[in-house]
Image (cartoon, rainbow, N blue to C red; front, side, top):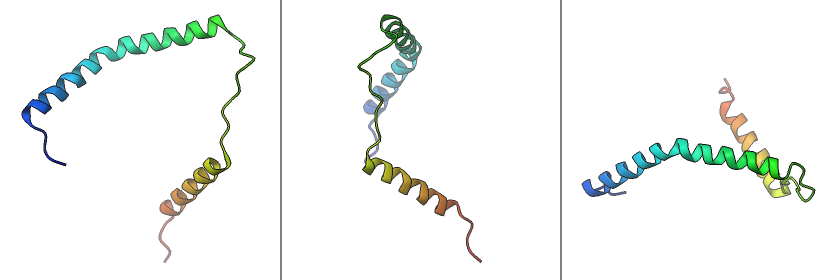
Length: 76
């Protein structure tokens, strides 16, 4: 990847600063929206929790197995 130009660096810093400044306000908006949605409809009869499909379950299990073998001490 090519290094960023000074103009690109300034733009990136401005965007990151704006995000940092707006983050608390956006957190409040999310919290208020969450509370409002709970108050408006406490019990949603049409809500079905997401299910993990067979392929996703197998992928998660394989990833966990890989982590276990990576963390195992070397055989002597």
